[in-house]
Length: 175
Image 1: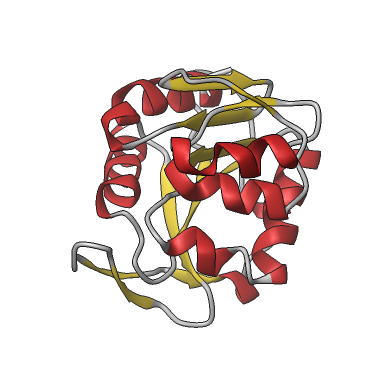
Image 2: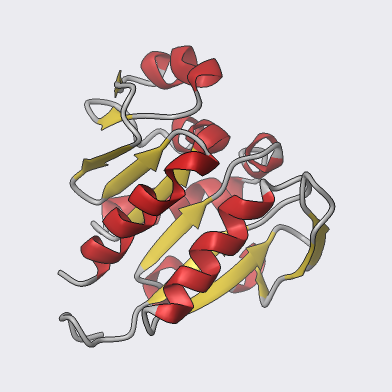
């Protein structure tokens, strides 16, 4: 895919049960608004409910996608990361995206997925404060900022950080 301001990028948004509703839907609509393709990706199934009950029907499952066909991934928080990190296919997808220098964006508890994918060593990141120790033990320098950009890795703390998070995500995609 050609790079540049007007090139459409294909971004996976990982979904599992009890996802943080705003952390899926806000990035989804912002990506579409910016002219990108946002693909919701489930693990083993396609229908899920968010932490606050909002339903989603995913367009694909992790078993049927490959990192080489995507330009980035968004990992939302809620309780979904606790389930996402149990999938070896999710962890490989995230690690492959990172290794390729593609966008890896994670918010709130999504840092658990980054830790399990073993991509945090030597990086600077943020997350929801309750998982700070997990981020540090995975080898990252944790900072309490609304959004942190470390090369292709973009992290944020909570739904309140979504505007800054998506501003950074969209800026990365325009490079």
